[in-house]
Amino acid sequence: MNESTPRSALRTFLLRTTLALAVVTAAHSQNAPATVHHIAIEGDHFALDGKPLQIISGELHYERIPREYWRDRLKKARAMGLNTISTYVFWNVHEPRPGVYDFSGSRDVAAFIRTAQEEGLYVILRPGPYSCAEWDLGGFPAWLLANQNIVLRSADEKFLVPAERWLQRLGRELAPLQITRGGPIIAVQVENEYGSFGDEKIYLKRILQALKKAGLGEVLLYTADGGDELAAGTLPDVHAVVNFGPGEAKEEFAKLQKFRPGRPLMSGEYWDGWFDHWGAAHHATDLNQQARELDWILSHGYSINLYMFHGGTSFGFMNGANFDKTYEPDVTSYDYDSPVSESGALTKKYFAFREVIAKYRPGVKIPDPPAPLPVIEIPEFELKESAPLWPNLPNPVAVKTPQPMEMFGQSYGYILYRTKIKEPVSGELAVSELRSYARIYLDGRLAGTLDRRLQQDRLPVKAAAGSTLDILVEGTGRINFTTKLRSERQGINGAVSLAGKELSDWNVYPLPMDDLSKLSFSKTNADAPLGPAFYRGQFNLQETGDAFLDTRGWGKGAVWINGHTLGRFWNLGPQQTLYVPAPWLQKGINEIVVFAQDEPRSFRVRMLRAPVLNELATE
Image (tube, rainbow, N blue to C red; front, side, top):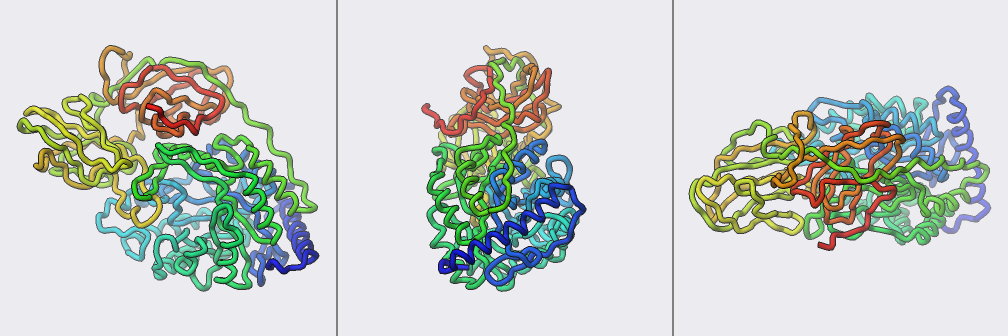
Protein backbone atom coordinates (compact mmCIF):
# COMPACT_ATOMS: atom_id res chain seq x y z
CA MET A 1 0.00 0.00 0.00
CA ASN A 2 1.36 3.45 -0.87
CA GLU A 3 0.32 7.10 -0.96
CA SER A 4 -1.65 6.59 -4.18
CA THR A 5 -3.88 3.90 -2.66
CA PRO A 6 -7.56 4.91 -3.15
CA ARG A 7 -9.22 5.90 0.11
CA SER A 8 -12.06 3.40 -0.45
CA ALA A 9 -9.52 0.58 -0.67
CA LEU A 10 -7.81 1.89 2.44
CA ARG A 11 -11.09 1.93 4.37
CA THR A 12 -11.77 -1.65 3.25
CA PHE A 13 -8.28 -2.68 4.36
CA LEU A 14 -8.71 -1.12 7.78
CA LEU A 15 -12.18 -2.62 8.27
CA ARG A 16 -10.96 -6.12 7.41
CA THR A 17 -8.03 -5.65 9.79
CA THR A 18 -10.33 -4.52 12.57
CA LEU A 19 -12.71 -7.45 12.11
CA ALA A 20 -9.83 -9.94 12.22
CA LEU A 21 -8.53 -8.40 15.41
CA ALA A 22 -11.97 -8.23 16.98
CA VAL A 23 -12.50 -11.96 16.53
CA VAL A 24 -9.19 -12.88 18.17
CA THR A 25 -9.57 -10.28 20.94
CA ALA A 26 -13.04 -11.54 21.76
CA ALA A 27 -11.72 -15.08 22.06
CA HIS A 28 -9.04 -13.90 24.50
CA SER A 29 -11.46 -11.84 26.58
CA GLN A 30 -13.81 -14.78 26.98
CA ASN A 31 -10.96 -17.08 28.04
CA ALA A 32 -11.76 -19.33 25.09
CA PRO A 33 -9.49 -22.32 24.44
CA ALA A 34 -6.26 -21.42 22.67
CA THR A 35 -6.62 -21.38 18.91
CA VAL A 36 -3.77 -21.92 16.49
CA HIS A 37 -3.27 -19.03 14.07
CA HIS A 38 -1.03 -18.30 11.11
CA ILE A 39 0.88 -15.06 10.61
CA ALA A 40 2.46 -14.21 7.26
CA ILE A 41 3.38 -11.53 4.77
CA GLU A 42 1.09 -11.27 1.76
CA GLY A 43 2.37 -8.70 -0.70
CA ASP A 44 2.40 -5.27 0.93
CA HIS A 45 0.67 -6.23 4.18
CA PHE A 46 0.84 -8.58 7.14
CA ALA A 47 -1.86 -11.24 7.26
CA LEU A 48 -3.33 -13.09 10.20
CA ASP A 49 -5.16 -16.23 9.08
CA GLY A 50 -5.28 -14.72 5.61
CA LYS A 51 -6.82 -11.41 6.74
CA PRO A 52 -4.89 -8.10 6.68
CA LEU A 53 -3.29 -7.12 9.97
CA GLN A 54 -2.12 -3.62 10.82
CA ILE A 55 0.15 -3.85 13.86
CA ILE A 56 -0.40 -1.01 16.33
CA SER A 57 2.08 -1.78 19.07
CA GLY A 58 3.66 -0.18 22.11
CA GLU A 59 6.92 -1.07 23.84
CA LEU A 60 7.18 -1.89 27.53
CA HIS A 61 9.71 -4.04 29.37
CA TYR A 62 8.53 -6.43 32.05
CA GLU A 63 11.93 -6.14 33.76
CA ARG A 64 11.26 -2.43 34.33
CA ILE A 65 7.83 -2.99 35.93
CA PRO A 66 6.98 -4.66 39.26
CA ARG A 67 5.26 -7.94 38.47
CA GLU A 68 2.20 -6.86 40.45
CA TYR A 69 1.72 -4.03 37.94
CA TRP A 70 2.10 -6.00 34.71
CA ARG A 71 -1.64 -6.37 34.22
CA ASP A 72 -2.29 -2.71 35.01
CA ARG A 73 0.15 -1.59 32.32
CA LEU A 74 -1.20 -4.10 29.79
CA LYS A 75 -4.78 -2.98 30.42
CA LYS A 76 -3.64 0.56 29.76
CA ALA A 77 -2.09 -0.60 26.48
CA ARG A 78 -5.43 -2.05 25.36
CA ALA A 79 -7.23 1.07 26.54
CA MET A 80 -5.00 3.28 24.39
CA GLY A 81 -6.14 1.23 21.41
CA LEU A 82 -3.05 -0.91 20.92
CA ASN A 83 -3.50 -4.43 19.58
CA THR A 84 0.10 -5.48 20.28
CA ILE A 85 2.86 -4.92 22.80
CA SER A 86 6.58 -5.36 22.28
CA THR A 87 9.22 -6.31 24.84
CA TYR A 88 12.92 -6.95 25.05
CA VAL A 89 14.24 -9.94 26.96
CA PHE A 90 17.40 -8.82 28.76
CA TRP A 91 19.85 -11.70 28.81
CA ASN A 92 21.72 -10.43 31.89
CA VAL A 93 18.51 -10.52 33.95
CA HIS A 94 17.94 -14.22 33.27
CA GLU A 95 21.49 -15.63 33.32
CA PRO A 96 23.23 -13.86 36.23
CA ARG A 97 26.02 -16.46 36.21
CA PRO A 98 27.13 -18.73 33.37
CA GLY A 99 24.63 -21.55 32.97
CA VAL A 100 22.47 -20.38 35.90
CA TYR A 101 19.03 -19.30 34.65
CA ASP A 102 16.28 -17.46 36.48
CA PHE A 103 12.73 -17.24 35.18
CA SER A 104 11.08 -16.82 38.56
CA GLY A 105 9.00 -13.99 40.01
CA SER A 106 9.48 -10.73 38.15
CA ARG A 107 11.69 -12.58 35.64
CA ASP A 108 8.89 -14.90 34.51
CA VAL A 109 8.70 -13.62 30.95
CA ALA A 110 6.33 -16.42 29.93
CA ALA A 111 3.85 -15.29 32.59
CA PHE A 112 4.11 -11.72 31.32
CA ILE A 113 3.37 -12.82 27.76
CA ARG A 114 0.45 -14.98 28.87
CA THR A 115 -0.93 -11.98 30.77
CA ALA A 116 -0.70 -9.92 27.59
CA GLN A 117 -2.71 -12.59 25.79
CA GLU A 118 -5.33 -12.58 28.53
CA GLU A 119 -5.68 -8.85 27.96
CA GLY A 120 -6.26 -9.39 24.24
CA LEU A 121 -2.86 -8.26 23.02
CA TYR A 122 -0.44 -9.74 20.54
CA VAL A 123 3.26 -9.75 21.44
CA ILE A 124 6.40 -8.82 19.54
CA LEU A 125 9.37 -10.58 21.13
CA ARG A 126 12.82 -8.99 21.03
CA PRO A 127 15.20 -11.62 22.46
CA GLY A 128 18.47 -10.08 21.27
CA PRO A 129 20.84 -11.38 22.44
CA TYR A 130 21.68 -7.65 22.18
CA SER A 131 19.03 -5.19 23.27
CA CYS A 132 20.47 -1.67 23.70
CA ALA A 133 17.48 -0.12 25.55
CA GLU A 134 19.66 2.11 27.76
CA TRP A 135 20.25 -1.08 29.77
CA ASP A 136 23.64 -2.05 31.21
CA LEU A 137 25.87 -3.44 28.41
CA GLY A 138 22.83 -3.63 26.13
CA GLY A 139 21.59 -6.64 28.08
CA PHE A 140 24.75 -8.73 27.75
CA PRO A 141 25.75 -10.46 31.01
CA ALA A 142 28.77 -8.77 32.55
CA TRP A 143 30.40 -12.13 33.23
CA LEU A 144 31.15 -12.41 29.52
CA LEU A 145 33.81 -9.73 30.07
CA ALA A 146 35.75 -11.96 32.46
CA ASN A 147 37.30 -13.38 29.28
CA GLN A 148 39.76 -10.66 28.31
CA ASN A 149 39.86 -11.86 24.70
CA ILE A 150 36.13 -12.06 23.99
CA VAL A 151 34.69 -9.92 21.18
CA LEU A 152 31.09 -9.14 22.06
CA ARG A 153 28.42 -9.05 19.37
CA SER A 154 30.51 -10.80 16.76
CA ALA A 155 31.10 -14.20 15.21
CA ASP A 156 33.74 -14.86 17.88
CA GLU A 157 32.95 -18.34 19.19
CA LYS A 158 33.77 -17.20 22.73
CA PHE A 159 30.72 -14.97 22.43
CA LEU A 160 28.48 -17.03 20.17
CA VAL A 161 28.59 -20.23 22.20
CA PRO A 162 27.06 -18.67 25.34
CA ALA A 163 24.72 -16.52 23.23
CA GLU A 164 23.37 -19.54 21.35
CA ARG A 165 23.07 -21.47 24.60
CA TRP A 166 21.03 -18.60 26.04
CA LEU A 167 18.65 -18.41 23.08
CA GLN A 168 18.16 -22.16 23.21
CA ARG A 169 17.19 -21.90 26.89
CA LEU A 170 14.85 -18.98 26.22
CA GLY A 171 13.14 -20.99 23.49
CA ARG A 172 12.11 -23.58 26.08
CA GLU A 173 10.18 -20.83 27.86
CA LEU A 174 8.68 -18.97 24.92
CA ALA A 175 8.47 -21.13 21.79
CA PRO A 176 5.12 -22.59 22.99
CA LEU A 177 3.72 -19.05 23.17
CA GLN A 178 3.96 -18.31 19.46
CA ILE A 179 0.65 -17.67 17.73
CA THR A 180 1.22 -20.80 15.66
CA ARG A 181 0.80 -22.77 18.90
CA GLY A 182 -2.05 -20.78 20.39
CA GLY A 183 0.02 -18.08 22.08
CA PRO A 184 0.15 -14.32 21.38
CA ILE A 185 3.68 -13.96 19.91
CA ILE A 186 3.30 -12.82 16.30
CA ALA A 187 6.87 -11.68 15.57
CA VAL A 188 10.45 -12.21 16.77
CA GLN A 189 13.21 -9.71 16.13
CA VAL A 190 16.57 -10.98 14.92
CA GLU A 191 19.31 -9.18 16.91
CA ASN A 192 18.66 -5.42 17.21
CA GLU A 193 19.72 -2.43 15.11
CA TYR A 194 22.84 -4.27 14.05
CA GLY A 195 23.36 -1.91 11.12
CA SER A 196 24.28 0.83 13.59
CA PHE A 197 27.02 -1.42 14.97
CA GLY A 198 28.55 -3.42 12.15
CA ASP A 199 27.96 -5.42 8.98
CA GLU A 200 29.19 -8.91 9.87
CA LYS A 201 26.62 -11.02 8.06
CA ILE A 202 28.07 -14.28 9.38
CA TYR A 203 27.18 -13.11 12.89
CA LEU A 204 23.63 -12.16 11.92
CA LYS A 205 23.11 -15.50 10.18
CA ARG A 206 24.29 -17.37 13.27
CA ILE A 207 21.80 -15.47 15.47
CA LEU A 208 19.03 -16.22 12.96
CA GLN A 209 19.94 -19.90 12.97
CA ALA A 210 20.06 -19.92 16.78
CA LEU A 211 16.56 -18.46 17.01
CA LYS A 212 15.20 -21.04 14.61
CA LYS A 213 16.97 -23.85 16.43
CA ALA A 214 15.42 -22.58 19.66
CA GLY A 215 11.99 -23.01 18.07
CA LEU A 216 11.34 -19.27 17.74
CA GLY A 217 11.14 -19.19 13.96
CA GLU A 218 7.47 -20.09 13.39
CA VAL A 219 6.23 -16.48 13.29
CA LEU A 220 7.38 -13.31 11.54
CA LEU A 221 11.13 -12.89 11.79
CA TYR A 222 12.43 -9.37 11.20
CA THR A 223 15.35 -7.01 11.61
CA ALA A 224 15.09 -3.37 12.67
CA ASP A 225 17.47 -0.57 11.69
CA GLY A 226 17.59 3.10 10.84
CA GLY A 227 16.87 3.90 7.21
CA ASP A 228 20.51 4.56 6.39
CA GLU A 229 21.69 1.34 8.07
CA LEU A 230 19.27 -1.11 6.44
CA ALA A 231 21.82 -2.66 4.09
CA ALA A 232 24.26 -3.38 6.91
CA GLY A 233 21.77 -4.71 9.44
CA THR A 234 19.47 -6.94 7.39
CA LEU A 235 19.41 -10.39 5.86
CA PRO A 236 17.86 -11.07 2.44
CA ASP A 237 15.36 -13.69 3.65
CA VAL A 238 14.25 -11.78 6.77
CA HIS A 239 11.67 -9.01 6.81
CA ALA A 240 13.01 -5.51 7.53
CA VAL A 241 11.44 -2.64 9.46
CA VAL A 242 12.76 0.86 10.13
CA ASN A 243 13.35 2.83 13.34
CA PHE A 244 13.14 6.62 13.59
CA GLY A 245 12.08 9.61 15.64
CA PRO A 246 9.42 12.32 15.29
CA GLY A 247 9.43 14.26 12.05
CA GLU A 248 11.16 11.49 10.10
CA ALA A 249 8.29 9.19 9.12
CA LYS A 250 7.89 10.15 5.44
CA GLU A 251 11.62 10.13 4.77
CA GLU A 252 12.37 6.89 6.64
CA PHE A 253 9.42 4.96 5.23
CA ALA A 254 10.51 6.06 1.75
CA LYS A 255 13.95 4.57 2.43
CA LEU A 256 12.41 1.31 3.58
CA GLN A 257 10.08 1.19 0.59
CA LYS A 258 13.00 1.70 -1.75
CA PHE A 259 15.07 -0.94 0.05
CA ARG A 260 12.26 -3.54 0.12
CA PRO A 261 9.69 -2.48 -2.48
CA GLY A 262 6.23 -3.98 -2.28
CA ARG A 263 6.67 -5.26 1.28
CA PRO A 264 4.76 -4.25 4.43
CA LEU A 265 6.02 -1.00 5.92
CA MET A 266 6.49 -0.80 9.67
CA SER A 267 8.31 1.34 12.18
CA GLY A 268 9.97 -1.06 14.61
CA GLU A 269 10.62 1.85 16.97
CA TYR A 270 8.91 5.23 16.71
CA TRP A 271 10.69 7.25 19.41
CA ASP A 272 7.87 9.14 21.11
CA GLY A 273 10.20 10.36 23.88
CA TRP A 274 13.81 10.11 24.98
CA PHE A 275 15.98 9.06 27.91
CA ASP A 276 17.97 11.19 30.35
CA HIS A 277 21.63 11.35 31.37
CA TRP A 278 22.99 12.40 34.75
CA GLY A 279 23.91 16.09 34.68
CA ALA A 280 21.85 16.89 31.55
CA ALA A 281 18.36 18.31 31.15
CA HIS A 282 15.25 16.11 31.28
CA HIS A 283 13.76 15.39 27.86
CA ALA A 284 10.23 16.47 26.98
CA THR A 285 8.80 16.06 23.49
CA ASP A 286 6.00 17.56 21.36
CA LEU A 287 2.90 15.39 21.75
CA ASN A 288 0.90 17.35 19.14
CA GLN A 289 3.55 16.83 16.49
CA GLN A 290 3.77 13.14 17.37
CA ALA A 291 -0.01 12.70 17.31
CA ARG A 292 -0.15 14.20 13.82
CA GLU A 293 2.63 11.92 12.60
CA LEU A 294 1.01 8.88 14.19
CA ASP A 295 -2.18 9.79 12.33
CA TRP A 296 -0.25 10.00 9.06
CA ILE A 297 1.43 6.62 9.62
CA LEU A 298 -1.79 4.81 10.48
CA SER A 299 -3.76 6.49 7.68
CA HIS A 300 -1.42 4.89 5.16
CA GLY A 301 -1.99 1.44 6.65
CA TYR A 302 1.58 1.24 7.94
CA SER A 303 2.33 -0.63 11.15
CA ILE A 304 4.05 0.89 14.14
CA ASN A 305 5.66 0.14 17.49
CA LEU A 306 5.69 3.12 19.84
CA TYR A 307 8.98 3.23 21.74
CA MET A 308 8.13 3.61 24.56
CA PHE A 309 4.47 3.11 25.44
CA HIS A 310 5.57 2.83 29.07
CA GLY A 311 9.21 3.22 30.04
CA GLY A 312 9.23 2.17 33.68
CA THR A 313 12.38 2.08 35.80
CA SER A 314 15.90 0.68 35.43
CA PHE A 315 15.81 -0.70 38.96
CA GLY A 316 18.98 -1.67 40.77
CA PHE A 317 22.25 -1.03 38.93
CA MET A 318 20.87 -1.81 35.47
CA ASN A 319 20.98 1.61 33.80
CA GLY A 320 23.20 1.83 30.76
CA ALA A 321 25.26 4.64 29.26
CA ASN A 322 26.04 6.26 25.95
CA PHE A 323 29.19 7.74 24.52
CA ASP A 324 29.00 10.89 22.41
CA LYS A 325 32.40 12.57 22.65
CA THR A 326 32.34 11.61 26.31
CA TYR A 327 30.78 9.05 28.63
CA GLU A 328 27.09 9.69 29.48
CA PRO A 329 25.52 7.42 32.13
CA ASP A 330 21.72 7.16 32.17
CA VAL A 331 19.55 8.01 35.16
CA THR A 332 17.54 5.37 37.03
CA SER A 333 14.16 6.54 35.74
CA TYR A 334 13.14 5.37 32.27
CA ASP A 335 10.08 7.59 32.20
CA TYR A 336 11.04 8.48 28.60
CA ASP A 337 8.26 11.11 28.35
CA SER A 338 6.11 8.18 27.22
CA PRO A 339 2.28 8.00 27.12
CA VAL A 340 2.25 6.11 30.44
CA SER A 341 4.58 7.63 33.01
CA GLU A 342 7.24 5.79 34.99
CA SER A 343 4.72 5.07 37.77
CA GLY A 344 1.84 4.15 35.46
CA ALA A 345 0.07 7.53 35.35
CA LEU A 346 -1.71 8.41 32.10
CA THR A 347 -0.37 11.53 30.41
CA LYS A 348 -1.76 14.00 27.88
CA LYS A 349 0.21 12.07 25.26
CA TYR A 350 -1.69 8.92 26.18
CA PHE A 351 -5.07 10.47 25.49
CA ALA A 352 -3.89 12.23 22.32
CA PHE A 353 -2.58 8.92 20.93
CA ARG A 354 -5.73 7.12 22.04
CA GLU A 355 -7.88 9.53 20.06
CA VAL A 356 -5.77 9.01 16.93
CA ILE A 357 -5.66 5.23 17.19
CA ALA A 358 -9.42 4.96 17.72
CA LYS A 359 -9.95 6.39 14.22
CA TYR A 360 -8.19 3.38 12.72
CA ARG A 361 -9.96 0.69 14.71
CA PRO A 362 -13.54 1.10 13.48
CA GLY A 363 -15.98 -1.36 14.95
CA VAL A 364 -13.78 -2.06 17.99
CA LYS A 365 -14.85 -0.76 21.37
CA ILE A 366 -11.67 0.41 23.02
CA PRO A 367 -12.02 -0.19 26.77
CA ASP A 368 -11.82 2.58 29.33
CA PRO A 369 -8.46 2.89 31.11
CA PRO A 370 -8.16 1.32 34.55
CA ALA A 371 -8.70 3.51 37.59
CA PRO A 372 -5.66 5.53 38.69
CA LEU A 373 -3.36 3.76 41.14
CA PRO A 374 -3.22 5.01 44.74
CA VAL A 375 -0.48 7.54 45.46
CA ILE A 376 0.70 8.46 48.96
CA GLU A 377 2.93 10.99 50.65
CA ILE A 378 5.15 9.92 53.52
CA PRO A 379 6.19 12.69 55.93
CA GLU A 380 9.81 13.21 56.81
CA PHE A 381 11.38 10.62 59.09
CA GLU A 382 14.87 9.94 60.38
CA LEU A 383 17.36 7.26 59.43
CA LYS A 384 18.65 6.65 62.92
CA GLU A 385 21.18 3.87 62.27
CA SER A 386 24.34 3.76 60.20
CA ALA A 387 26.95 1.27 59.07
CA PRO A 388 30.18 2.89 57.83
CA LEU A 389 31.69 1.12 54.86
CA TRP A 390 35.24 0.78 56.19
CA PRO A 391 34.47 -1.55 59.16
CA ASN A 392 31.96 -3.51 57.05
CA LEU A 393 34.27 -4.51 54.23
CA PRO A 394 34.31 -8.15 53.07
CA ASN A 395 37.48 -10.22 52.92
CA PRO A 396 39.89 -8.81 50.34
CA VAL A 397 41.55 -10.40 47.36
CA ALA A 398 45.28 -9.69 47.07
CA VAL A 399 46.54 -8.77 43.59
CA LYS A 400 49.72 -7.27 42.23
CA THR A 401 47.95 -4.73 40.03
CA PRO A 402 44.30 -3.58 39.91
CA GLN A 403 41.86 -5.73 37.94
CA PRO A 404 38.30 -4.91 36.83
CA MET A 405 35.38 -6.22 38.88
CA GLU A 406 34.45 -8.87 36.31
CA MET A 407 37.74 -10.65 37.05
CA PHE A 408 36.48 -11.18 40.62
CA GLY A 409 33.15 -12.64 39.52
CA GLN A 410 31.36 -9.36 40.17
CA SER A 411 28.91 -7.77 37.73
CA TYR A 412 27.46 -4.62 39.34
CA GLY A 413 27.87 -2.21 42.22
CA TYR A 414 31.08 -0.84 43.73
CA ILE A 415 34.61 -2.09 44.18
CA LEU A 416 37.35 -0.85 46.51
CA TYR A 417 41.09 -0.88 45.73
CA ARG A 418 43.44 -0.41 48.72
CA THR A 419 47.20 -0.17 49.00
CA LYS A 420 49.82 1.22 51.35
CA ILE A 421 52.04 4.16 50.41
CA LYS A 422 55.55 2.99 51.22
CA GLU A 423 57.33 6.36 51.37
CA PRO A 424 56.43 10.04 51.63
CA VAL A 425 55.27 11.32 48.26
CA SER A 426 53.67 14.35 46.70
CA GLY A 427 52.49 14.24 43.11
CA GLU A 428 49.81 13.26 40.71
CA LEU A 429 47.72 10.15 41.26
CA ALA A 430 46.82 8.76 37.82
CA VAL A 431 44.20 6.02 37.34
CA SER A 432 44.21 4.37 33.92
CA GLU A 433 40.97 3.14 32.34
CA LEU A 434 38.63 4.14 35.16
CA ARG A 435 35.11 2.71 34.86
CA SER A 436 33.51 4.98 35.83
CA TYR A 437 33.43 7.13 39.01
CA ALA A 438 35.91 7.08 41.89
CA ARG A 439 36.35 8.67 45.29
CA ILE A 440 39.93 8.76 46.52
CA TYR A 441 40.68 8.51 50.25
CA LEU A 442 43.91 8.84 52.21
CA ASP A 443 43.68 7.32 55.68
CA GLY A 444 39.91 7.48 55.44
CA ARG A 445 39.77 11.16 54.45
CA LEU A 446 38.41 12.20 51.05
CA ALA A 447 41.22 13.46 48.80
CA GLY A 448 39.14 14.01 45.67
CA THR A 449 36.95 12.46 42.99
CA LEU A 450 37.47 11.23 39.45
CA ASP A 451 34.53 11.27 37.05
CA ARG A 452 34.70 9.54 33.68
CA ARG A 453 31.95 11.86 32.38
CA LEU A 454 34.39 14.74 32.80
CA GLN A 455 37.32 12.76 31.40
CA GLN A 456 39.07 12.93 34.76
CA ASP A 457 41.75 10.34 35.50
CA ARG A 458 44.21 12.12 37.83
CA LEU A 459 44.45 14.42 40.85
CA PRO A 460 47.20 15.83 43.08
CA VAL A 461 47.91 13.81 46.22
CA LYS A 462 50.26 14.29 49.18
CA ALA A 463 50.78 11.21 51.34
CA ALA A 464 52.98 10.24 54.27
CA ALA A 465 54.81 6.94 54.51
CA GLY A 466 52.47 4.19 55.66
CA SER A 467 49.33 6.01 54.52
CA THR A 468 46.42 3.90 53.30
CA LEU A 469 45.22 4.79 49.81
CA ASP A 470 41.63 3.77 49.02
CA ILE A 471 40.03 4.09 45.59
CA LEU A 472 36.30 3.41 45.82
CA VAL A 473 34.96 2.87 42.31
CA GLU A 474 31.32 2.83 41.27
CA GLY A 475 30.37 1.19 38.00
CA THR A 476 27.83 3.84 37.00
CA GLY A 477 26.48 1.91 34.00
CA ARG A 478 28.15 0.21 31.07
CA ILE A 479 27.91 1.68 27.59
CA ASN A 480 25.08 -0.06 25.73
CA PHE A 481 25.57 1.27 22.19
CA THR A 482 28.39 1.19 19.60
CA THR A 483 31.50 -0.97 19.62
CA LYS A 484 32.71 0.80 22.80
CA LEU A 485 30.60 -1.67 24.79
CA ARG A 486 33.20 -4.34 24.02
CA SER A 487 35.65 -2.84 26.55
CA GLU A 488 33.22 -1.89 29.33
CA ARG A 489 34.89 -3.74 32.19
CA GLN A 490 34.09 -1.88 35.42
CA GLY A 491 36.45 -0.72 38.13
CA ILE A 492 40.07 -0.08 37.21
CA ASN A 493 41.28 -1.62 33.97
CA GLY A 494 44.85 -0.34 33.96
CA ALA A 495 47.75 0.81 36.07
CA VAL A 496 47.60 3.26 38.99
CA SER A 497 50.61 5.50 39.47
CA LEU A 498 51.59 8.15 42.01
CA ALA A 499 54.17 10.81 41.13
CA GLY A 500 55.02 8.81 38.03
CA LYS A 501 55.63 5.53 39.87
CA GLU A 502 53.27 2.60 39.42
CA LEU A 503 51.66 1.36 42.63
CA SER A 504 51.47 -2.36 43.34
CA ASP A 505 50.35 -4.86 45.96
CA TRP A 506 46.66 -4.12 46.27
CA ASN A 507 43.84 -5.53 48.35
CA VAL A 508 40.60 -5.54 46.39
CA TYR A 509 37.16 -5.60 48.04
CA PRO A 510 34.27 -6.51 45.69
CA LEU A 511 31.11 -4.67 46.78
CA PRO A 512 28.20 -5.91 44.63
CA MET A 513 25.76 -4.73 47.33
CA ASP A 514 23.36 -7.55 46.53
CA ASP A 515 23.16 -8.72 50.16
CA LEU A 516 23.01 -6.16 52.98
CA SER A 517 22.21 -8.70 55.70
CA LYS A 518 25.78 -8.82 57.05
CA LEU A 519 26.07 -5.08 57.67
CA SER A 520 26.58 -4.07 61.30
CA PHE A 521 24.37 -1.06 62.09
CA SER A 522 24.49 1.12 65.20
CA LYS A 523 22.94 4.39 66.30
CA THR A 524 24.27 7.22 64.13
CA ASN A 525 26.67 9.62 65.82
CA ALA A 526 26.14 12.86 63.94
CA ASP A 527 29.40 14.28 65.34
CA ALA A 528 31.60 11.48 63.99
CA PRO A 529 32.65 11.63 60.31
CA LEU A 530 31.46 8.42 58.70
CA GLY A 531 32.74 8.67 55.14
CA PRO A 532 30.89 6.31 52.77
CA ALA A 533 28.17 4.60 54.79
CA PHE A 534 24.82 2.85 54.84
CA TYR A 535 21.94 4.52 56.70
CA ARG A 536 18.90 2.62 57.92
CA GLY A 537 15.49 3.76 59.07
CA GLN A 538 11.90 2.63 59.48
CA PHE A 539 8.53 4.12 58.68
CA ASN A 540 5.02 3.00 59.52
CA LEU A 541 2.18 2.92 56.97
CA GLN A 542 -1.55 2.61 57.50
CA GLU A 543 -2.12 2.35 53.74
CA THR A 544 0.18 1.70 50.79
CA GLY A 545 0.45 3.49 47.48
CA ASP A 546 3.03 4.60 44.95
CA ALA A 547 5.44 7.24 46.25
CA PHE A 548 8.62 9.05 45.23
CA LEU A 549 11.61 9.14 47.56
CA ASP A 550 13.14 12.61 47.71
CA THR A 551 16.92 12.09 47.47
CA ARG A 552 17.91 15.76 47.52
CA GLY A 553 20.59 16.39 50.11
CA TRP A 554 21.99 12.86 49.99
CA GLY A 555 24.65 13.37 47.31
CA LYS A 556 25.36 10.13 45.45
CA GLY A 557 24.45 6.53 46.18
CA ALA A 558 21.72 3.89 46.06
CA VAL A 559 18.54 2.96 47.97
CA TRP A 560 16.81 -0.23 49.12
CA ILE A 561 13.19 -0.47 50.35
CA ASN A 562 12.19 -3.69 52.12
CA GLY A 563 15.02 -5.46 50.31
CA HIS A 564 14.14 -4.13 46.84
CA THR A 565 16.83 -2.06 45.11
CA LEU A 566 15.21 1.16 43.87
CA GLY A 567 18.31 2.29 42.02
CA ARG A 568 20.91 5.03 41.98
CA PHE A 569 20.58 8.68 42.93
CA TRP A 570 22.92 11.59 42.24
CA ASN A 571 22.47 15.20 43.28
CA LEU A 572 23.54 16.25 39.76
CA GLY A 573 19.98 15.61 38.59
CA PRO A 574 17.86 15.93 36.57
CA GLN A 575 16.30 13.05 38.54
CA GLN A 576 15.87 13.98 42.20
CA THR A 577 13.40 11.30 43.30
CA LEU A 578 13.28 7.51 43.11
CA TYR A 579 10.06 5.70 42.27
CA VAL A 580 8.79 3.54 45.14
CA PRO A 581 6.14 1.07 43.83
CA ALA A 582 3.26 0.34 46.18
CA PRO A 583 3.72 -3.46 45.88
CA TRP A 584 7.15 -3.06 47.48
CA LEU A 585 5.61 -1.37 50.52
CA GLN A 586 3.53 -2.97 53.26
CA LYS A 587 1.10 -1.90 55.94
CA GLY A 588 2.93 -1.49 59.23
CA ILE A 589 6.71 -1.24 59.55
CA ASN A 590 8.84 -0.71 56.43
CA GLU A 591 12.62 -0.52 56.20
CA ILE A 592 14.79 1.74 54.09
CA VAL A 593 18.56 1.56 53.59
CA VAL A 594 20.47 4.35 51.85
CA PHE A 595 24.07 4.06 50.77
CA ALA A 596 25.66 7.50 50.53
CA GLN A 597 29.20 7.99 49.30
CA ASP A 598 29.60 11.03 51.55
CA GLU A 599 27.82 12.11 54.70
CA PRO A 600 24.43 13.61 53.79
CA ARG A 601 23.31 17.11 54.77
CA SER A 602 20.58 15.55 56.90
CA PHE A 603 19.74 12.06 58.14
CA ARG A 604 16.07 12.58 57.31
CA VAL A 605 14.10 11.60 54.19
CA ARG A 606 10.55 11.98 52.91
CA MET A 607 8.43 10.61 50.08
CA LEU A 608 6.43 12.75 47.67
CA ARG A 609 3.26 12.20 45.67
CA ALA A 610 4.90 13.21 42.37
CA PRO A 611 8.34 12.68 40.85
CA VAL A 612 11.04 15.31 40.36
CA LEU A 613 12.71 14.41 37.09
CA ASN A 614 13.79 17.79 35.75
CA GLU A 615 15.86 19.53 38.42
CA LEU A 616 19.57 19.96 37.80
CA ALA A 617 21.90 20.67 40.71
CA THR A 618 22.61 24.34 41.39
CA GLU A 619 25.68 23.77 43.56
